[in-house]
Amino acid sequence: DAGVTQSPTHLIKTRGQHVTLRCSPISGHKSVSWYQQVLGQGPQFIFQYYEKEERGRGNFPDRFSARQFPNYSSELNVNALLLGDSALYLCASSTRGQYNSPLHFGNGTRLTVT
Amino acid sequence: AQTVTQSQPEMSVQEAETVTLSCTYDTSESDYYLFWYKQPPSRQMILVIRQEAYKQQNATENRFSVNFQKAAKSFSLKISDSQLGDAAMYFCAYRSSVVYNQGGKLIFGQGTELSVKP
Image (cartoon, rainbow over all chains, first blue to last red; front, side):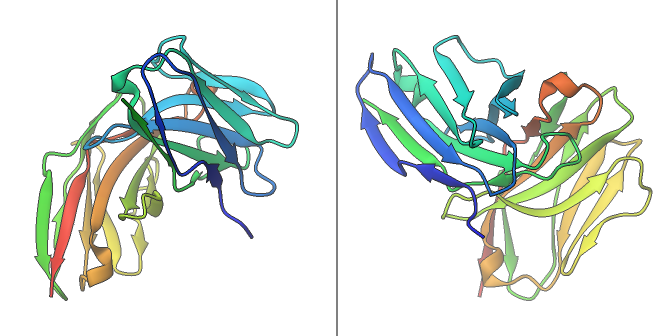
């Protein structure tokens, strides 16, 4: 079975631009979470979606938004990019999104903002 | 709010020897999960081992074991018979079981970079 897939693997954007990151969960997983990992730090929780509804939101500005589609794939959108948004963005999926449902991570999207 | 602290930014171990990575956390909850994740240069976060707070017995997965001290809020990872493939960044993480609308989020520590010397 395919694992969590994320696209693109790398991208470079300019300050002020908008970016969309994509994630396809493991087949049968209905929950998707997004994390931001700045270089040298641990990942920080951004969002969690379950059954197309937002179930959790981390301490990120409104420039960050996400959605989940009927096939359970997800997009993370970031508007008005800042240099500080440069990071590895990780997507994780789980069966039900509850605390006892293990998270499976993708390889991430490396975003560089110049 | 819960926090996770890893006080060892870097650790080094000789191949075939044993190393222990430290983690402490802060929470007022009584039921939660603790995890150790490994992140190699490939960037994928790989689950190494997990511990349920209500279980007294320390979790073990092959060469990996934990020392879970609930009262001290300590959760260390022991790697026995270290192998070159164990070299990676290791993250300790906490997950609440209490509030559903937190979305089952993981709270990560800063990480410990483990190098394995041949």
